Amino acid sequence: MDSDEWPDEPDEPDPEARWGSPEDDLVSVPGIDLPGEDAEDAGAEVDSDLAKFFWVTVIYANVAVAGVSIGLMLVGFRGQAVWGGGAVAVGLFALYRTYDLYRTYQDHVAAEESEEAEGTDSEPSEHNG
Image 1 (cartoon, rainbow, N blue to C red):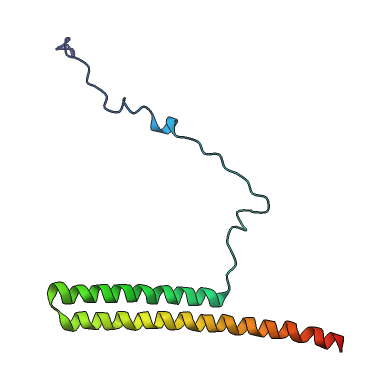
Image 2 (cartoon, rainbow, N blue to C red):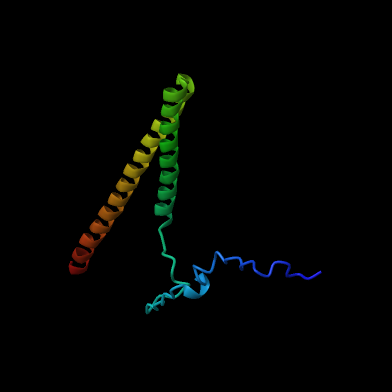
């Protein structure tokens, strides 16, 4: 038996033919080399105190947003005042801790700046006297 039983049947259309070859048609974006920047030097050095304050604040802020929003939804949609109120209370406490950590870090930075300012003011007088 011959495999071409229907010689008048048209070829099936190729649905991907209208798009061409995406791999070949991609735009090549040229890169630039900046002097003094290597792949090893790409990371920035961050003070450990700053990193600690930042990540703890991020966690507290996420807990605050989740607690307040989930708590309000529990109260509003399900009428679960006890669970919702607890979640809102946890969220508000986390929000307070976020603000408290922010103020603590601001005071920490202000204290370091005042110590540096006192150190620079006293040095010229010691050398001159």
